[in-house]
Length: 436
Image (cartoon, rainbow, N blue to C red; front, top):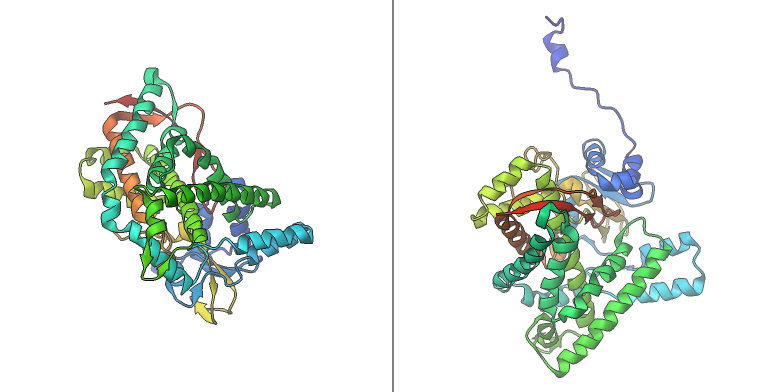
């Protein structure tokens, strides 16, 4: 029998100090940390939930604090939109002329992603008309058809027990097809966007380097040129589709300018592709690692409400977007920490989604969970405009996949995570499938 008394048994466990900057560097700066950031998130969230990092910005990890930063009007996008680019260019020793060209390039390419009210309010109000709940839900039959067409190819490739890379054959091409249909991009032109979008979004990664920046600019220019030509064609010959709607949308005398239409088309294509592809890949990988939950989803695949809850939980479990940033527009505080005007704040959405103060047993994947939305699509006025469409695509994909195949297992070749953290996903997910 133990000799410990009641006082000894109830004494709190001694909390060992951590180095929050070391945890943050592990997540942002190491391949291992980016592949599995969640242990680092847990230590930060429990020991140092809000701190000013050695690189100068504040870091916020708990759900309520992240929600406050993303929702409060005294936080916004930086009024100096090229501040991060300027800091990076100076650190890399980029020649002054090239640095000036970079800064001018990024300064002129503002979208909903980078604007504050009233500019953001005006632009989002015009674009949001094409993403009403009824408009998105009306797309469901068409998304089902696109998904089934891709699953026909998957079934053929999987014959004889062969491994199929779900990322290449389903997770990537489905959102490209959906956004291509929405924006009126011809089928033969869509394949190029997978590489272009992946290259352009590398600029969002905290550890991107000068070559990434140069490649991102070139990819962005290529997409702008393409959509510029397509917009011109749609002005001359309007057709069904979102692009023609963006050209025609107006509020009295207000309408989108040519540059705004092009920037919005690029943003919608990029965001719609990346978020949904990562949702499908991360979600299926999670299910394969939790066979009981996979079976649970299979048994309820004909219940739309159950599938909807499952997709929300998969988004919480391994979010396609792991972090977001804001700047303090005035002196304020978060969790008792004073934040000065102009200071940058990084919200770790992946950490917030596993906050035990918000979700019961957050380290357990529970497809029946019904505790409200995670922070995977951000929050506040910059909440992802295409969130409903991404969820719909996820619902259709998992429903049709589990209906079509009675057995899904990890295949040969190894799973490969994308070496990034802002956008978290897989580049390879081989599986074997047996048709139902």
